[in-house]
View 1 (cartoon, rainbow, N blue to C red):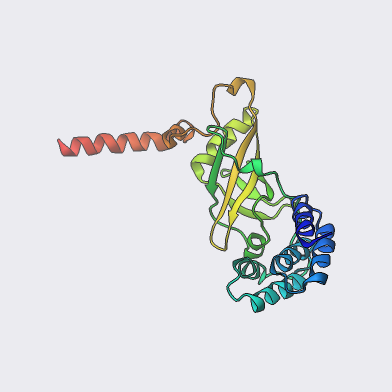
View 2 (cartoon, rainbow, N blue to C red; view 1 turned 30 degrees about the vertical axis):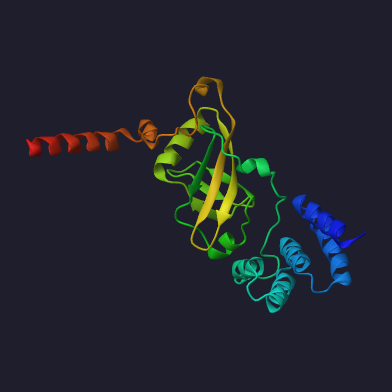
Length: 231
């Protein structure tokens, strides 16, 4: 099989989350050309996904020796620098459709109060994560229960109301770096009694309906006082 076909097979294996197959195929490519940068990067990623972080780092460093400005290897090393073997957990990649935004049914949001840097570093774009809505704020966790961050108060209040009403949601990592994690929240079930209620209205002001009444009253009182002062 020629190198181009092997490369296609390697990419397909990665998209299917078959990391052992990805290692095998990229290894075959590197037997023919040990300096093939794309194959080295793919092999590095595959080892990392299987928890073999030190091997992944070694391969990424090799890429940078061949190409000092390779952005993929640089980003990988930055992400893995605080990790050791077995720190990265694998989740099969999600379909590209999860990143399609659908008005009223999806929401991209940056998380607040991020968790441990090692947990953040272990995340990948497309990873499925889960919501916990049992406290005042809705928190986001990895599938194995590690805390990632929290949603803003207004969105948390709305989602608690909708979930209690029978709606269901999936959450995926949209993007991640050391200082920011964005997730995409998708409505997957809408209950009959909420059939006319969009999960994510286009206007942020719609969230007022789910804000505690005392906060709304205080804002109204402040507005009245300001008008009186101006008169």
